[in-house]
Length: 168
Image (cartoon, rainbow, N blue to C red):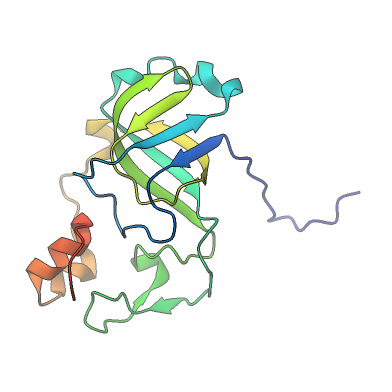
């Protein structure tokens, strides 16, 4: 007998993300971060890595298990000059479903370990999925910046979008 609501889902971690971030992580992956970042896939999924090394980039989908949720539907991103936006028009990690997604570069794959470029996830973050990033399918040349392109301080905004640490 199942007493769970119809919209209840269960996901199982398929691995763990390792990063140098213990208490604070950047808002976006830092492209040039030289620290060690890796994904350790549960060994039972190792066969699923076959030919993944033929791709340059992957999507990493993970559970934001360390985010304190407040479920506000309208937020003011700290870099957006008090602009109020809906949570779905933001990249805030504080979401109704705490799921993170990052595009990272594959450095190498050894057995069940994927060595990657910087990711904006805490050490020990549960991995939900990995998918290849495919240029012509995933890159959209007509993509825009939405409300973000209306922000005044373009240089400051660029630092946030690129995940570059800086002072406010």
